[in-house]
Length: 67
Image (cartoon, rainbow, N blue to C red):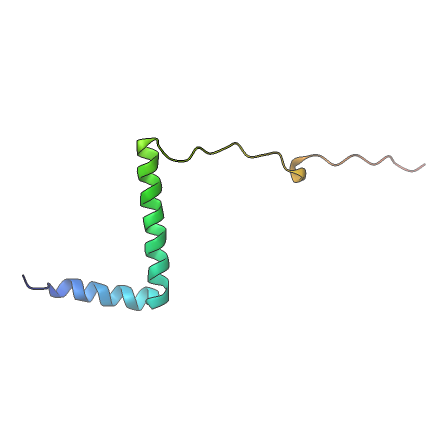
């Protein structure tokens, strides 16, 4: 089976657009996304816990005006 020339052209274009350093990061992100999707579809993924109340969401105490 011969290697189709159009795949080589696509590979070169992707390498030029994203660069050699960015491609592993893109593939890692894609793999994590696919893994998360599969876990979500099977329902066996890690359960997420509700976010805890942070101090920044609480209202600050009101100051009394000075007379």
